[in-house]
Structure formats: structure tokens, C-alpha cells
Amino acid sequence: MVASNKKTCSVESVEEYIKTLRDILTNERTAVFRGHSNKEWKLLSSGDRNELKSGDYQDIWLEGYKHNYDTIKTENFIDAVVNMQHYMIPTKLLDWTYNPLVALYFVVEQNPDDDGEVIVAYPRTIYEPDLEETKTLSRYLKKIYHNENTFEEEMNLFRLLHCDKNMFFCVTKSNERIQAQAGLFSLHLDISKTDIAKKTENELMDILRNKPSDSEMNNKSEEIKRGYEKIKKAYIDSHKRDEWNTDFFFYMDNNERRLEKEYSIIHDVLAKLRKSWIWDYYKFYHINIEVENKRIEIPAKYKPGIAEDLKRFCNIHARTIYPDFPGYTEYIRNRYSHKISNQELTGLNFTDFEPLMR
Image 1: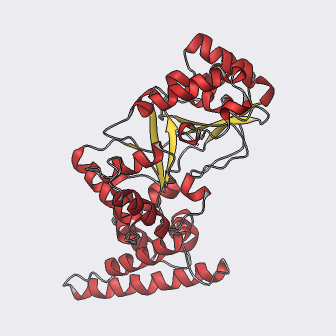
Image 2: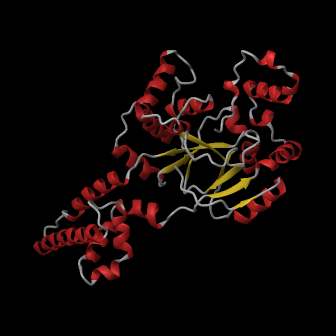
């Protein structure tokens, strides 16, 4: 899931909302938006909200596949997952939009008694895969759904995308709703600090054991290795940990001058570390930390007025947000709901027409 901070402000109208966006958006980073009609909702995918396990995702996909649904039997697995998301099947994807007014619509369209909010996120990278890269991403997603993904694949994807643990991406083939909503998705990568720590130490040990032919340099490598072990032990002892974690290298980098008084070898340790791919992880995940999310609150009492202005001045309403036929039926149902009796509604199931971005 994407990290967040406290809400930025509260707005009462579309005009105030746009003014706020002018104040908080930066030209240096691309912003994406997500609307919650209830501000208490968390940034969780539908699968995470339902606490699905890897085996559950596999069962869901197989259930659709064995019934020969074309929306699931796609050339690229990523299209299958997006289609499942489109039809409200629980997935690991989270919906976002490039259009802040679309996000605002999702705040005001439902839950009229609840305060809502728009989350403004600044992805480090938005992955727009070409055909070959789509196949790579599809293979990864398919392994998730078949419970076959490995730590190596998680890290390969991380290194390929130069992202943090929340990967933002567009799809090469969009359906009508995604196009109308200027939609994109995020996927939370299952990269734990413990896994990273173990993998990093193994790779760093390989680096430190890479002994040149010169005997003097052999001794230097052994000295670096011993020094590294001492620094690691000092970190564990000083932080009262049973084991070190990913913060260890950030700690070494931040405290290089202080540590060199006791461990002269730290320059060599960091020099070797900074030449490895490991440093890319820490550079992206710790040092080049992403801009925190911002939140714009919309109190419940202002939702009706904002919804009316979005429709009147921005042409944003159910019929334009959901341009397919199920969306049209939802639009008609809402527009004429006061004319439809409870008796006429009895037995009808409109769950297929629920909005995409939930």
C-alpha cells in the first residue's frame, strides 16, 4: 500500500477544490488521484480488503478460466486482471485516475452522509509498458495468481521498474471505462524488509569475497569482510535488535563520519556497497524518498452541490464516467429512482453496475 500523511485541507466546492490543487500540485512530479466517498477507507485493493491469500487469487482465476470466459482468457494476463477488476472481482489492483475531477466524482457519488476525501499521490514512476514489457509484467501477475511468485521475481520487477513497493502502471488495451476515467492502477509488491535484508547480505558478502589475484588485495577484502561484521554487530547491539534489517545500510551511510572513528574500514565497505545494485534499492527506497500523499477532505454536507456542479459545468456524471451499457443502466436507475417503486425493484440485482473505483 502507498504511504500517506495527514489531510491537507477541507473544501466546500469545485472552485475551492481546483484552487487547492493549484496550491499543492508540483510541476516536478506527475500526480494521480483516488476518491473515497468515506474518508475512513484505507488504500487497500479489493483483494486486501477481503483478506485474500495467494491461493484465493488462483482459485478465482481458475474458476473463470474453466468456464471459458473470454475476459479472463486473454493474450496477456495483465489484461485478464484488469478485466476482473473492471467487473468487480477481487484483485490485487488499486484504481487511480489522472483526472482530479473524476476522483472528486467518486467522492460525492455515494455515501451522502459520510465525509469523503481525494488522495493525491506522486508515483516515482508510472510504468507504461510496451508489448515486450507487458509480457514481463503479465508473467509476474500470473505467478501471483498461481501462488508461484518468488522473491527473486519480486526484486527483478522492482529493479526493472525503478519503483518502490507500490508499482503504478497503465494498460496497453483500455476498456471504455478506463478511457473515460483516465484510469491507471497500482500494485503493492510483496517485498518484505526481512527478505531484502537476507538477500542484500548474501549479495554483499559475495561482493566482499570477490578477491583480486594480488595477495595484498586479498587481505584487504578479508579486512573489509571482518570490518563489515563488526559494524553489523554494533548496529544490532545499539538498536537492541535480534537481527539487522534494511535500515542498516541507511544507518551506515548517515553515520559514516561517526563510525569511521571506530571502524576505519567503513569507507571501503560503503564504496563496495555503492557500486552494487543493492545501493539502487536504498537510493530509491530510503534516500530518494517519494513525496508523501496529500489528502483533500470533502465534508458530507457539500457533496450534493459538488455533484451538481460536476454535472453542470464539467459534464462528469454517471453516464460519462460509465459509458458502457451497464453504466448507462446505472445512470438511468439513479436518475429516475424516485419514480421506481420498491415493489418494482424487488428481486433486481444491480451489483454488476457498481462503480469501478472501489
